[in-house]
Image 1 (tube, rainbow, N blue to C red):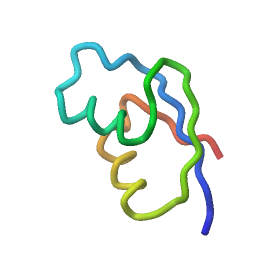
Image 2 (image 1 turned 90 degrees about the vertical axis):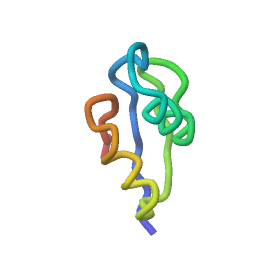
Image 3 (image 1 turned 30 degrees about the vertical axis):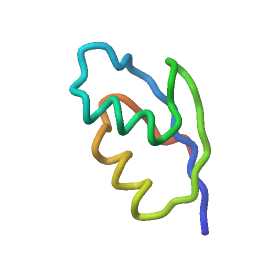
Length: 58
């Protein structure tokens, strides 16, 4: 299966708790951090939940 790289582009400050938990589940702790995940429906759903905080790098 394909992999995607996810980069945190905005701060988690003043975000609701569920969005902070989504960032934690993706493994993103700091600004400009990049993590690589398999492109499963679960991961894509998490990325779709917080599009204003992350960007997908191809």
